[in-house]
Image 1 (cartoon, helix red, strand yellow):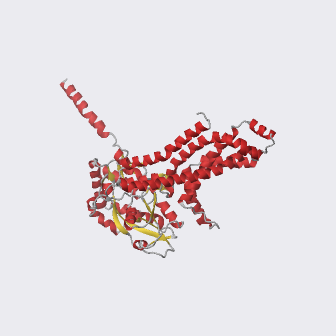
Image 2: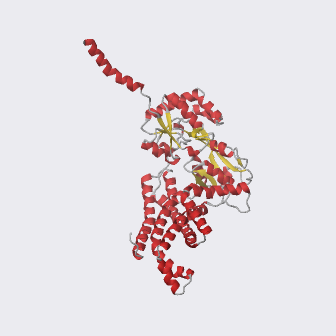
Image 3: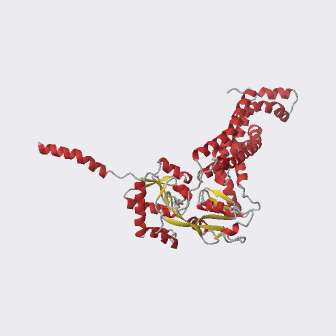
Length: 492
């Protein structure tokens, strides 16, 4: 009996331990943005379901060293630190430059790569050869990515810049002649600029910095484990083999054996004061309103002829009008903006057309929203006109009025009372949709908010001010809509 009791106690005490110990380890969640492109992490051209890149290879060997699987989680690059501190991911690794303001938010591991910046220009560029020479050329604009070392350097030198979300768009605009040069990290230049015969490097690489893995500040065990794993990979030559495979190993990487995050001694940037950022946000708000009003004006001009074509045109014209409406209502406006800005420029370059199809960001934004919202407005106008009783036409005809005169003096004024309220609602919707134009380089209100907060500004304070500006602009539109409903007798 005693032996049975002893066996039972052993079973109760140790079997759970064995079961728990043998359970597979939970994978570490690695946050990165595959949209950022080569050579960090990007889609395999042979199999788009798979990611490739030197950081993908690095994640594989880190999983081996840590003894835990690592699962990739797609995240927006701009929100990596938010996702990390919120607990959505365990670590972020995506070409993250170690900067003082970022060190205040997260715990960085020891560096795993040493980068430099490279200035890229068009092959025929003769005006300047170095970044310093750019300071003396008025009207010159360089492309870069926001919240990067390159952006901070351009700001420090006082060189006009245009920010992008990714490197592909930067180099595309440089080829298209919209930029005078691009300043980005050398790995990006090697992947996108070096293979392009229309582009070339100018000047030597400059402004050395570090890439490191970001971990939540209170997760010191994971950070220490990653530090140790990177040390082993560096000492064993694994890092050199990975980087050589991607043509990234150079003499700078020899310094990794001595580098540590503590080497960066610059003080963290101070926060923005209200006086510093409010005027900047107001300028963005003005641009938001300008895009909204001009785009809606274009939509209105296009919508009425389309609606009339669907109502009164011959069969072929009705078909074309219906095709327009269904096409532009069926595609995302974001895709349309990309096509107008990048696609048309590519067509112009590829086919050497007699007309230059390259649009500036503001024009592309106006045209994109105007074409898209014209499809919705056309349906509103068609419904509003169709709601007028047929007897109105007959009464006007009995008075000897022609059809165009009847439409202009009898039908359209009555239809306006049906059209105006929903049209005002669309104006409010368009006002909020203008935040999408940041993808083609228009720095409107929402984009300015993101740039400020990612440069060390307070999310809550600047976010509240931005929200107030949106409300100041949008609430009057809501009141206008309700006023029109009462004024024209439209019952909700």
